[in-house]
Image (tube, rainbow over all chains, first blue to last red; front, side, top):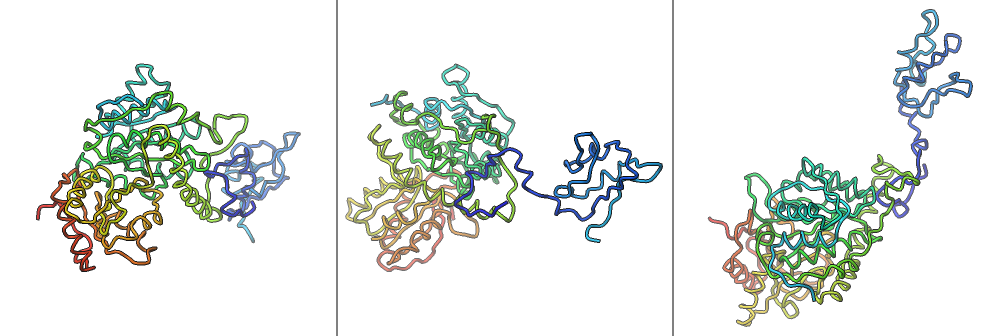
Length: 98
Length: 392
């Protein structure tokens, strides 16, 4: 978002366009990062359902893709819920920046 | 000319709200404002107004509902007093910061503890920094007249801020006085049709109210909020000029009384100004050059205009019907703020009076004036802050 001068602000801090939260990238809050291990993924989409944001992307074929790291805050719910394949998790949490 | 009636301040304000016919009113009863909203709720019940009356469980909810209704795009009013205003406190800031033109008669009453239902300005002064416009009224006529003007100022497209119309609890709210009503048709054309700005109910244009604004923009929003307040005095004067055309009754940012050639002056708000004017007349008859300045617009406070009106006086007594414990009275602080811009600074004293509805009597005003005469002669103030009418 561009930095505005006080003279340019909308009256009463009303946000006049819908869906503008997409401009506020919250991924920077993350300290833990989910890692998707595709070979262990059974495409159950539990991660997509449980994500409290909308940070698990699903394509037109209904298959999950890479995380949306612009918004993933690293809460780890997806990794916790992931059933994996034969006891091997398809999502694991790793420390950010390692 | 409108009908002349004998009514209380509350009755006059309820009549004003009836004539304005707001879209939504959300209110909770509290003495001494109860009677105002009770009368208004009868108008709702009897179909005299089209207002949606929201009966809520507290003043916090009342102001919350008013904020919602105003954001939805309605003309909104409520009324309260004392603890009710105190309970609204956080929502008052939200109404102002969100720039919602809610109008609220505030029937001034003391704050607990100890519990007291009578009139003083503790409630209004406590809401000084909420971002609301505050207009103080001396009597029922002013409370009635100020209600219409408050809607015009608050709803002005360059302003869009909430406004309180203050009158002294019981002294004005429950005393029967002569009031000149304005004809309904005149009210309608004076107040005009409500213009919604960014209404939430305009569902084809979705928008969000109340976003999170952190370190990157909050400072700028507050700067902008101050700026819009600085525009209020000019708009208030424009509205007052229109009002005078309609009724012949003149209003300013403050009322000067026998101030032109005054050497000493009393500054006092609301009903106590009436008593003080009487005593000033007596002293004028004795040749004492004394005048009065009665602030009407307390927020925003017209510092420079008041400084100009008081520039030739040698001594000023500021009478506060509210206190700041461990500090000077709130009105005193504003007047000394105004004095800062003067070339020759007058001596200023602060008298705290009438707390919890304690009568403000002529002899109190006389004592203040007698002392003020001495202060003007010597230029010396012995005690800056004193309590008057207190047993000691």
